[in-house]
Length: 196
Ligand SMILES: [Fe+2]
Image 1 (cartoon, helix red, strand yellow):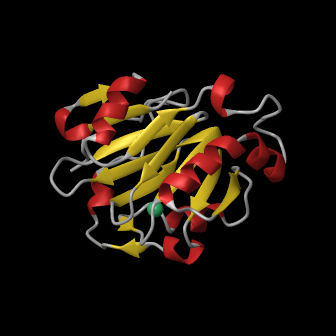
Image 2 (cartoon, helix red, strand yellow):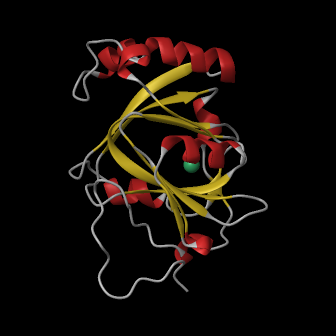
């Protein structure tokens, strides 16, 4: 289950309907997949990429029809992934893309910060079973949680359109990339939101 936090308002949402409404008002699609209707019985977080894509084929096709996505792949990140920190450094500072960022999380978790044009920055922690679509042009950044694990299906209109376009505002450094869901470990020392 996702967790959504609005640091400036010291507010946290933990139920899917409230999270969905908050995100929808800001143009972001979010849904919890149900194994009964969205996932084939043979889906497993450890399945091969092809097996995963097949297990989620119905949802992938639905998303493709709706959003014009033409390809889907599976990204698999673990603590031992070579070059992990360099990879994360590409996405943990504020940026936007020329196309939607669509992620269907099948294992692990991750933390998106979103910077709306007319509202406070908020953080959405996604985990297995969460589907999120961050529309093109949305300012955001991404971090892994302490377990450094995420496996997700990604959909693209054109993979080249997913190149990060950095804002270089530095706003990302004002927010602690701390997850609040199942992997939550309290930060050391006094915590202030956002970090100043
Ligand atoms: Fe991104």
